[in-house]
Image 1 (cartoon, rainbow, N blue to C red):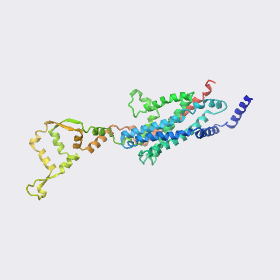
Image 2 (image 1 turned 180 degrees about the horizontal axis):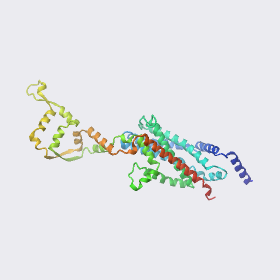
Image 3 (image 1 turned 90 degrees about the vertical axis):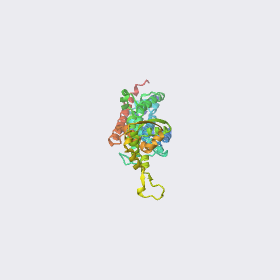
Image 4 (image 1 turned 30 degrees about the vertical axis):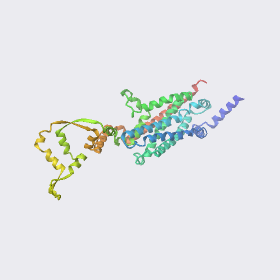
Length: 390
């Protein structure tokens, strides 16, 4: 009787679910019910919590300077990869016995995987929206103007969605390989470490490992967010911050008379320019002044510097004891800071982070390629599920 019931159920399954398209909607409905009734919705508050923690860390630096923007881009990539990976790492292996039974009854693996692709895409869309909304609430100052669309938030949403979805499909494939949820969760840390270490942006990698970055989702993910954040145009502040911290350090500076004379006549240094514009009176005994009775410090210094006797000693050198802070004040703190930040930013320029449509679209296509490649691998792998030991 039991065998008869099994046969009857199989016959009904074949009759009702013969088409691949029909099976997609059946399994999609099943996944949506699991989202509601088996607490799969918990991934959304978890995404909000992670986004909140990351937002509080990057809010004071991202979009403000080069280092902070690159760090913020890497942090957002980590959030996307984390969300995507843990969406699907257990979805196949936890019901492997059910899949085998239904596959023998006529289930199409391609329909089953496509249903998961649609469901996981919707989940990634929700997580992307939550991540952007929460990071904005925590104080991340997103610029308004985008490159591909009129809004940067939309451009970033597309990039983050593709990163999350590609990671999701990677984990879906891993879930088809693993026989148990324990095995899947054991593999997952290695997948995450590989993605983050070989992103090619935050850690200096040996030359022989560079090709490995082409096999990571994090590499095009980091590049596209760094490009959209216009990282190359942000000031590089590490050097100027370091000089500020060294303000009380003493320096023994050797300087020549010629360098002093050139410094005193340099109108481009704010401190010197202000000193040279000062007016002093040459009139003695009478408080009344006329234009002929006054002279600027700059005019006096020019006359002193042009003196042949001093010119003859231009090569004489002297040792000057001065702190870094006082030296910066002489040159002009803001002028020196701006100069150092500009030169450091130029030296740190990366063509991969250039804000161009060609770069952004290329990285998007790279991520889309990952999505379909991992989905295809998951389909092929699951086709061999009947080879499992019965």
